[in-house]
Length: 228
Image (cartoon, rainbow, N blue to C red):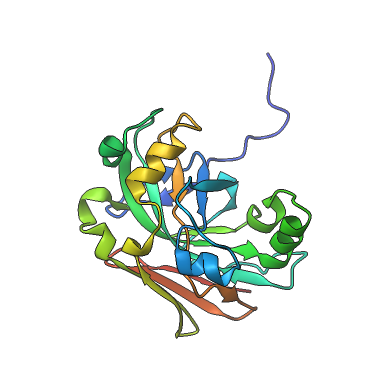
């Protein structure tokens, strides 16, 4: 009988408020979804179409765990984001139906090796080494969608060592959650367990060993980590 040559890697799991567990399938990230952040990175923004990059599910680090400073970078940046967790799959989803596919929401940090990302941009190469690495997607426990009201009015903030670094509202997103889900579903057959990191507001910046990060969005459970 054929056997696997080594034990399969376990599926990453994120806690759900209330005690259940959310197995992660894929992570899609929306680029430049806040105009002020795009501007601080030197880019003009239009609404022709959103664009995406990916992180491996195995980049997940659950909130509360320490993040080891990653190798081959001298410029690790924080990016505070709303994470949308899908509970149903589908293709060519209408924006008017998109919320039916959402299981819940979480606070998340898209950690970025900014120097490697900048080098890739300069050479017109993929962003993978700057964005997709171990512990680069720090995710807080997921709250069921029914507990999240009036999304556009929710404040999104990040502090580092207690100092405010990022602050906006979810209504500042260029592309709304329904628009993102609808567009993404024309590129992929979305699946239960997929996460969408919806972009970061202005104020991104470097962190160093010893820094304490805390991100909040309304009444969602905060995302927290210490860089070690």
